[in-house]
Length: 201
Image (cartoon, rainbow, N blue to C red):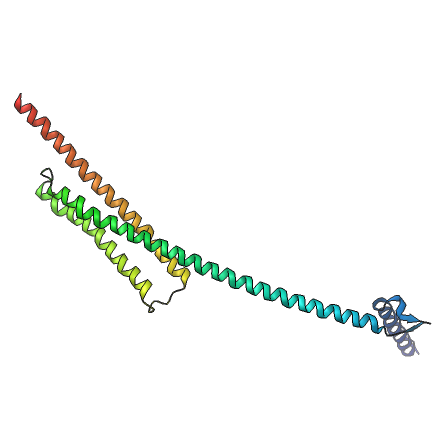
């Protein structure tokens, strides 16, 4: 007896839920005389709306893809410009290094106020900087001309920027060394002038 009551209550509940669901999802004019009626106009309108939405989504995805490609192109161009600038800066800095060694070092070593015992030490300090500069240039040349080193544009740019920074440091270090030796020469020259003047008196 109780089982039949439960089955009847369950069927009634299911029927009620089904009716409520249909009432919610069907428009009010889609029912006539208490019976659900299929509204073809609404369905076609909804289908058209979905198709239009799908087209818009497709166009939007194409636009997003296009913008992504343009962004990638800009990054590539930006990396290429950075690489070019870094290489130009490297060439300029190394030009300064070679020019400094060629002219200033020769003047310093030829000065009568530099002792013979100091010549080797001065030469070695300048040679170390030049050796580093030459090694860096060789490495940069390999990066730019060889496919053996598999690198992305971003990785290549990062290395070139680092080498540019190092070359700037080398130029600064060489300038400091040159200035220091010139100051030593000036000081010794002044000392020599003072000493000679005292001898004359």
